[in-house]
Structure formats: structure tokens, C-alpha cells
Image (cartoon, rainbow, N blue to C red; front, side, top):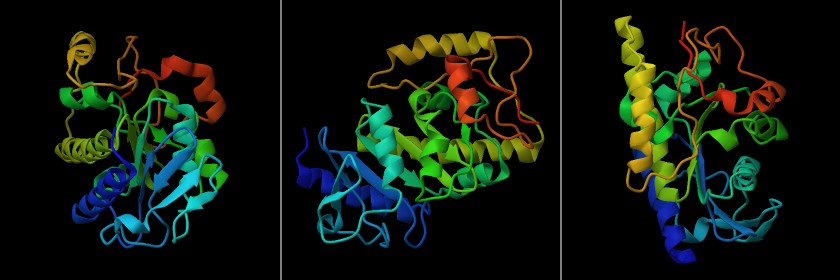
Length: 258
């Protein structure tokens, strides 16, 4: 298991990668690692992710209060803590604003069509959460219904959050979301999309269980009925928290973006 020092270096490293790839600008974004059951190591507020040093990071308790560190805690720490509470398997969280994926989020379009087999295996479906004001309980409330069943979420008019069993996997999922968004955008520009069918998706379910190092509980975008189920379409608001909780595992369906 990595030491706290190693975790600090990894967060700084991935922060620089987010900045270099244009996934964040100015002081946007935040990253964190669960150190143990009571402590989370996270990036500070009001600082570029491209210029952080290990000593700049702060440690907070699961109640959000700072335990140690010279800088202030990010106002979005509540989102990280929510994910850690709802997902005991998660030990790393990355929040950023990758341009293409954030563009889909701003347009109200979920990335929930099975267009690329690798994305289906690695992330399943990428839903769109309702808008919640950053740094307020609204954001956590908007994410709560989706966190248990997905490993990456588009946040309406905001950005993307991805999480995994390690910080490394959380960052790679963020890259996958943006890469898939770029592919999906091309299909929109070309005016044609050919999603994978049920038989192909059923084979990918089997393949997913055999992939080395694949540890995810993300919902597969599998259409279980002949008629597509409406979910997070253009011009249609995302499901409310109550609807999401009532539907439960039925969110594992893919719908057609119209």
C-alpha cells in the first residue's frame, strides 16, 4: 500500500496531467485519495492543479473538517466525501472540466450510447446528473442517486467526476470519458451513429468479467427491451433523485440521443 508521501506525489502528478491535457483551467478541478476510514487527502482550493507541490495538499476528516495542511480545503470536498461514503470500494476521485465531455454536459446529453466496445467494458454508461450549484449540498444531492451504479458522471453545466479503486484508475476513467465524448461528437457531426446491439453487449458483459484488473460496478448500457428507454435525452431533464432511486438497477439501459 502506498505511503502518504507517495499519494501526495501521485495527486500532484495527475494534477499536472489534467492541466497539461486541458482538462482544467485556472484553479478548476480537484483530486483526492482515501487514506483510511477517517481521512482523505485532497487538493486545496484556489490553486492551479498544474503548479501544486506535495506540501500544498490537505487532509480532511469524513465530516469535511481540515485535519492538517497549510492551505484551505476545496469547497467541493463534499462531492468527494459523498462518493467515499456511498462507494466503500472507491479510493480515488478526480473532478475536472474536459472540454468535449463538459460540452455534452452543458448541452444536456448523456454519454449513454454503446458506440465503442472498450468504453462499454471500462465504464459502461456515463449518465448525466441534474445541475447542482458547486460547493453546496445541491451538488451532492444531484450526484447521490447515480454514484452507486456508475464510475463516471457528467454534471450538467459543470464538468465530470470519475472515481475508482485507485487514483490511477480514477484518472484513466476521466481520460476515457473525454476520449469517448470526442468520438461521440464526431458521430453527431457525421449525422450517423451505429450503437452496438444487444447480442454484442451481452458478449461484452462476459468479456468484462475476464479483463485483467477490471474492477467496476458501473452499469452496462444494455437495452433490455425492444423500445429504447428515455433517459437524459436532449431536451429532456435527467431523472430526479426519487426516480433514480425507485428505478434502481433499471438504469442499466441505454437510450438513443435524439
